[in-house]
Image (cartoon, rainbow, N blue to C red; front, side):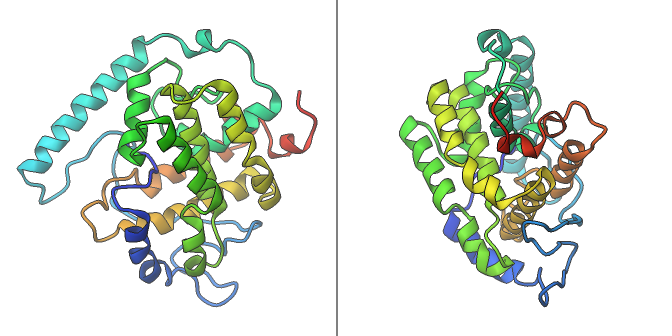
Length: 285
């Protein structure tokens, strides 16, 4: 299961690729290249194809893969199959966490909705990220994508994402720091930190509350938030271009489809439709 993590490359290694690759995205002020819109807080954006088609979940074998790649593919599918079994038969997360969320809590959980929407067995209605309790899958998600194996690791990664993340170094290349790119992953990591047993519920809510103010000041709608996430993700994807890890993440197209489902006003299953952006400016109920 591919997640938007620190990735196989370090932040420094990623940014060595970002500048030459992303510098061509933006032309003159107000101009747009390669299907990416001017990413101010009020921008709109169309997502262009940025990779070969692939399945939304699970590993994929690419042309030219050798025996090592085949072994990794087989191991990935075995792990993926085991994950689906556990998602189907594990204890109900709703029964373990039966208290309904308040309106502000639903809004904070929804900061991670793009990543959740692509994840099999996800939950949009609980702080716990999955419908079934699954500690091992949750820990694997954090360790494989972020190198998080302890509570200290978790807090360290969250601190970096909240204060600088990837956005500060991307800013010079794309014209602004894409806050949503870091905060969506921050919220996702916080939820999986709870699921992994690294933090408890009060700590998870405190961590989420710490990023509410900058997000609420920066964006005026879920669409603006999603557009900026996609801008940051595109820069990150381009940082992987030409490396051995370029096929590692879920494709930009699959992520764009997840966003489309979330912003669709007819999709009553979307947490963004059930909890509008303006909710965070209103009393918590």
